[in-house]
Structures are given as structure tokens and as C-alpha cells.
Image (cartoon, rainbow, N blue to C red; front, side, top):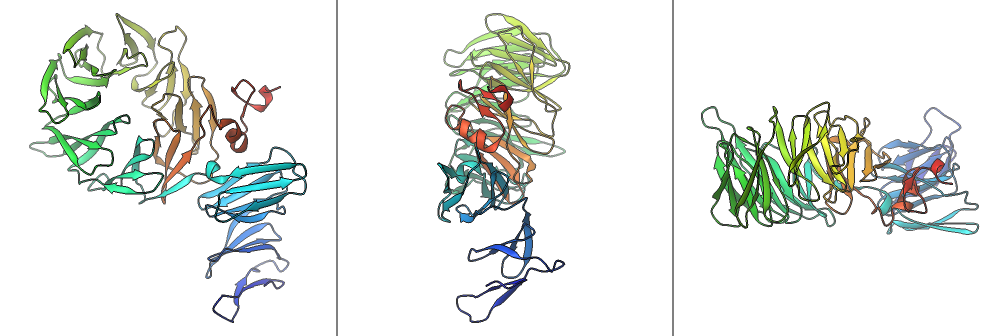
Length: 485
């Protein structure tokens, strides 16, 4: 019921009215539209304010620019509000999203249901259908400051706290979780293999007299923790389908296959500084003395070279399974011979394999694209930022955070760049991308937030037109409105 300045609710089991005071400092405030959702009362006032009352407290949820004839509840706990500026506002638990309409819709009407995320907008000569589940991110309720990394397209490995924290496997579709047996000391993730669903973890137990480290293997959806090795200093990588290559700090490399006992396979001069898995059962390693080896575990064949050593370095690979060697700011490729392909103005700190080359990372979290088979200069993909960007296993999507923590996406190798609208204030401590399905997870005060991006060869055109000012032209190339005739 509505009076001039107040709303009254009649509960189902009572005969008394609940008074909701709308007027505080404006005697001319009037309610224009109301909606009761069972647990909340939504009111749009003559000042274009959206007010929410939960039975005890009244607060302003959003200041609207304008209001159209649409005011409806749809699925996912969202409210659909039409505006006079050619767009629809969708209010949902994480924030507000705006859906720009492709053109003016005359005499608009909306059909939708609280039980479905789909709705239909009908106007004179036009019918538009939308699914907010494809436009809005999904909240994964977890403890605050939970860390996470994708191990598979629908599996997260999450950690609530480094010290005595809880590790678990989390299904991002069903929400089900599997608790992992406790890990000792201070655990850190060394390597994730999304193909086999394995994660290599190093557990460190600080001690003045005898520091100890342990290598442990986690397998997706299993609670057990498999001990691989224990020594004062350990480092390792996952190789092949079920092998772990590791060193104990003295230049010797060991391999453990399945449940078999580890065996020594090769020794390098100096300390091991890098390990990388190549194709099949091959791997490469580099040392502090500038020695680089390439080994095939099926035949135990070892190849050795030496490169000019720097103060720090590591090894990586590319799509052709060649060895990519980093020494300070220099980049080498070892195929049949060793070739220096790039020199930067600062040391390289990391590398990702992509289609058409590699992405190199720096200490300030800048990222550059390098074509290893061309003489072209490196291309800057991301400027320096608070945290390093991440690349999916396909090597076709780079995800970073801008200054305001807004998601910035770069399609590779085309280097087409776009951003995702900010509906909420994210945390910068977490950023992970699924291997092959273009899911992105960010940190949030209430847990984790997951975006599901459309595939670049599927629904990207309509998704971009709904969410950004980017378009896809007739040739399927990402472009901006002023570039399309």
C-alpha cells in the first residue's frame, strides 16, 4: 500500500501494517514503482533513487540516471531496470551491469521470471533475448582472502591461508569441494599440469639448524598428498603423464615415475636454475654455470650446450618444443643451434608459451610478446602493474589488471585488447584463468568471482557488443566502431 510519503507492507500472518519511512529531508519524495521479493522491498522514488528495505533497515541501493517502464525481477537475484538512455541496468548481488540496446526500442515491454536468467525485450518490430548468466560474473562463496589456481577447466585448487591453511578442490560448476589432507610447513605451488590434473607443491619447514623442504604431489579430486622427496633444498617440475623431475641443490637431477623410486638421470655443472617440460618425456634444464641440457627420459639421451651466463636465468619452451633460454635480459632459442633472438632493457623474470611466440614477463609485471621466428621487435602487451598477468594453456588469452583493478584482456597472437566492465571492487591478490574454456577468477571480499567469457570463434561478437564498445567485423576481426565502414 502507498501513502503520499510512506509504504506499508501487510505480512501474510498478521493484520497489522509495517511502516517503511521514505521521507527524511524531502517532503516531495514519492514512490514511482515498487516490487516486493519476499525478503526485500524495492522502491524507485521520484528522485530516481532505488531504495531497499529488508524488514528492519532502509538504504539507498543505487542512484539511477533515469527510469523507463521496465522494472522486473529476473533470475540470479537480479533486478532489471529500464532507463531513458537506451540501456538496461541489471542490479545483482555483486553490483550493477548495464546492457546497451542496439537501437531505440519503441513501446518496450519485458517478459522474464525470477526462476530464469533469460528475459525477452519486445518493442515495435523487434524482439531481443538476453541471458544474464552469460553476461554477469558468478560469486563462488569462500572465506575472505582465499587464494586459488585453476587446475582444470572446472576445477580450482583453493587455499584459505598459507600458515595452517585449508587446501581443497573446488568444482566451479556444482560448488562441491573435496578437502585435501593437511600439508606441513609453508607450502607453495611449483607447477600445475592441467592435462593430467597434477600439482607439484613444495613444503618448507624453517629452522635455524636444519631447514627442511619436501616435494609433494597433489592429484585433482583426491585428498591424498604424495611425498616425492625430502631434502634441505628442493626444486622440481612435472614431466610427461606421470613423472616428476627434481634436484636437491647440488646439480644432480632425479626423476620419479609413478610410484617407482627416484633415480638420478643427469648432473649439471653448478646449481640448477631452471627446469621445463618439453614434448612427451623430454625436458630441459639450466645451471648457474651456463650449462643447458636437453634430455629424453625414454632413451636417456642427453644433449649439452653452454651459453654466456648472467646473474640469473631460467629455461622455457615454445609451441615447437624448442628450448628458450633466458640469461638476464637476453633471450636465446636452442633448436639445432643456439641463436640469440632478443635483448631487453631489463631482466626477464618469467615466460609463457603462446600461439606465435612467447610472452616474457618482467619484475615490474610488464609483459611483451616476442616472435621467435622473426626479426620483428617485441610488442608490449601490458604495462607495469600491481601483479603479473596470466595466460591460458591455449596461449590465446592474456589477462591482466589495470590501475583500477579492471580486467584487461588481450587476444593472442592478434594482440586485440579489450576490458571487462567493473561491476564490483575486486581484490588484486587473486587472478587465475582456466586452461581452455576462458573462465577467469578474481578475488572478492565474499570469496571468489568467476567470469565466463565467450569463445573468440563463437559468441564473442554478441558478447562484446553487449558488454563493451568493441565490435567484430564481417571478417571476424576485433575492431572499434570508427574502424568499421
